[in-house]
Length: 528
Image (cartoon, rainbow, N blue to C red):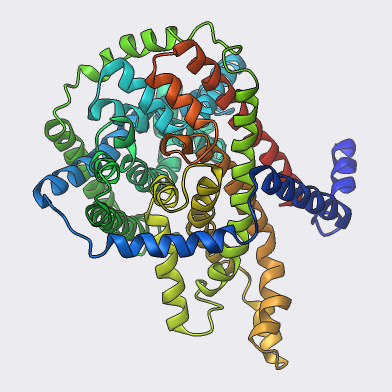
């Protein structure tokens, strides 16, 4: 214990915050890495501004938006929503038992714990669009590969957060139930499940929101959804039609986000004066999810048995990737990996700079005026509602092929992602210090820099590092639309049936994403 405390003291000062030298070293290293990455990509500081001018010109060519076939687009929109729900439900069914095996306090054996955590990490590290592309090769074009891709990738998030919730349960109820002589399963159902259900509901609702954003682009690899119609419009250069489809996507995602906020508010309030009303709300939510799942199987024309038999064809495709061929691409593969990391670094740095002011203005407790608050929140909502791959398509159309377009797209997308997290962090600060500054006559700027930012900074830094993790993961698939990175080599090898080469790239992608996740987690542990 004394050794542990000594190490902690070496890392932090007496108040539990990082030592200044740690911050300085990491800040300098981060700046050097960002500037080196920008130089590697030949990304000039004015590139993003110039890109916005080109985007404005492209948007002029898109106006006015139109929907040539509203009926078909409506069907695809419903299909996309049902894919998101069904994929999340399937992932939840798989994640619940996996979480009990992965949680330290409920796993039957350390080996089982390690294996379950490894499977969860693998699902999280593999990009969903990559999983969809591989499943399309094994199962054919359609919605089934898309649903399965959403489910498999969601296990990476749901399994981890479900297991974390189990590890945080109170052991008292378990000991009481165990004293009655019941077995392992009764102990889990009676003592653990009731404690974790509220957290699980929140994670489930949030994951449906994420999967809806993902499902709109699965059509780019033939995995169903409204993304197929969007890709068709962009390939045909019918930009007004493409903008109309983007508008439909924006409305769907915005409506889902508002619904998710409402559901979380009803079901996950810290205290409730009406337990019976809360139970009714949960039962109602369960009934709605069950009905949506059945509707998805019917509308999407998915045979329930196919949710089991897909393993064989998928395993056959994966088997064709072995042994991986690293020699076919040589230095081209190394360059693509470096380019992918560089895109993520530069995009995260630009996104952080743009997100900080937007996020502060979107915080209800610090915004200078309600109009400013709602404008900032609206901007964050609009940017978050458009998936990065669609933004990348627009930048490629405006700026041409290459990593610069991918960097600009991820930078803009980062504003919506990090801006919301910054706003949430600012809204959660202790109100005492800002009130004290105002009491002595401090203005808005003084309050911001003296009492708001110092409190929110640890959370903001942690969110920024998480954004870097997400951006590098996303940059691995931008190449599918010509926006640079390793994705171009990957999807080209799959398209041309060079599965041994694809296997090598898949392995590299997994190792890259896993290492980035571990490094960013280590840095967060030092700073936050």
